[in-house]
Length: 261
Image (tube, rainbow, N blue to C red; front, top):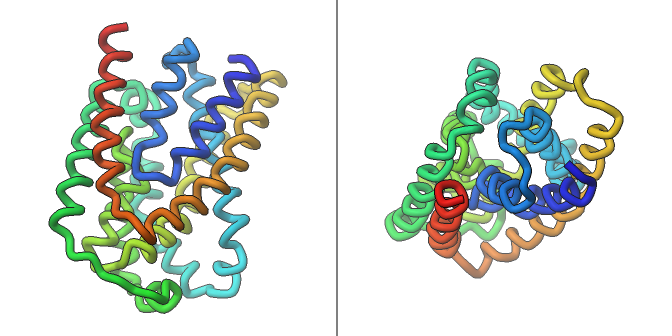
């Protein structure tokens, strides 16, 4: 991997991590276009660890809210429990098999796109002008349920963002409130994934690989800052159906690259 390639992958990560379109699928497609081998162990770790850049972007935006509102922070940590337990339990399976299964990735992208389109047409949309007030009313049971929905995203291609957003909407939260909660929930979730991978494989990185990780982290951070702000503005005027159709198009493109290469 070159520094230019690491820069591009960081840009892709920062742009797609918080949108309901699967950053994993985009990273896979970008790797294909950059002629990087999906069998490369460093690439697998790189794709997980540069999520730290996206985490830092969310932390930079919301750190005051979490420090001031300890009750909200506790709800975020409760929501993290299901994913944390599942992630620790099947880490090896995830990295060795799920992250490298083209059929699972492609199926998740397409089925996820169809699910978004259907859910947008069937779910009742609750409108709340005061996000802080709505999150204050969120119960610990609801937070845990949102965490259970997020855990589905352990399957590559599902999209952590999509799972939490539609899980929250199914529980009665407004788009704006669940999107913000999804951003906050990303902090412990992605930090844990990054930390676990560093513990498992960090000692194997060369100086050059550490430099590549730094470039990826910085580019992911900058773009994620812009992506989060864009998404918050987008949902005030639009629904998520467009993302569903986009996923179907992405699935077609991925099929071409994965099976007709």
